[in-house]
Length: 275
Image (cartoon, rainbow, N blue to C red):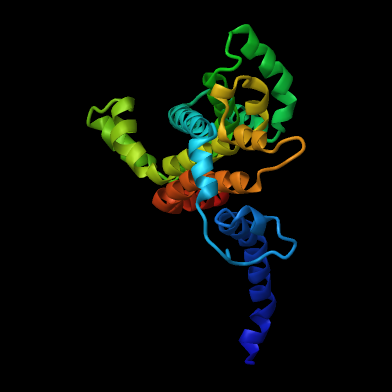
C-alpha cells in the first residue's frame, strides 16, 4: 500500500461507515416493503426478498387512508414552499438593500428565532389557532411551517443577495427601472439557486413535520403522512408490511424533488456557510 493511500485509509473507512449508517436503514425499509409478512418478521433478516410481493402497496393504496394523507401532505408542503419563497425573498432583499434603522439587529433577531425548539411554541400556537378557528385545518400547518422555515430561508437568501454586485442595480436605476423591476428582472434570476434551495428546505421541513400536525389536526380526513403512518402502528399489533410500504412511498416526493433541484440546494447551503 502506497504512502498517500495509507494515509487516506481512515478517511475512506469514515466515509464507508457513514454510508452504512445512513443508507442501510433506507435500504432495509425499501427492500423489506417487497417481502412477505412472514419474511419481514423472520428472526433471520435477509438482504433480498426471497419472494417479491406488492401486496403491501395494494393494501396501502386501496384499503387504507394513505392516499388522503399523501394529498394533504402535498398540499401543506407545496403551500409552505410557495409562501416561504415569497416572504423570504422579499424579506431578505429588503434587509440587505434597504437602509432600515437597526437592520443588522433585526436580521439577528430573525435568525435567533430559528435556534429555539418548536415545542416551546406548541401551546401558544395551539391557543392562537383555536381562537381564529384553524384547528383541524391544513392552513394551520402551513402557517406553522412557514413560521419555522422562513428565518433560515432569509439567512440563506441574504447570502445570495450579497454576492450580486450592487453596481448592476445602480445601472438599472439610472436607466429608469423601479425596485420591483430590478428585483424581478435582475436580482431573482441571479439568486435562482438560492431560491431553489429555500424551496427544497421548506418542502422537506413541512413534509417531515410531525409534532404540530399531531396536535393541530384532529380528524382522519385532515391527517398528513407522518401522523397517518404513526396511526398504522396499533396498540397491540403492527402491520409492518403496510408501514414499510407507506414509508417507501413517502420518500418518493423528496427523492423526485432532489433529483431536479438538489444541486441548487447544496449550492445554497454552501453559499450561506461561506458568506
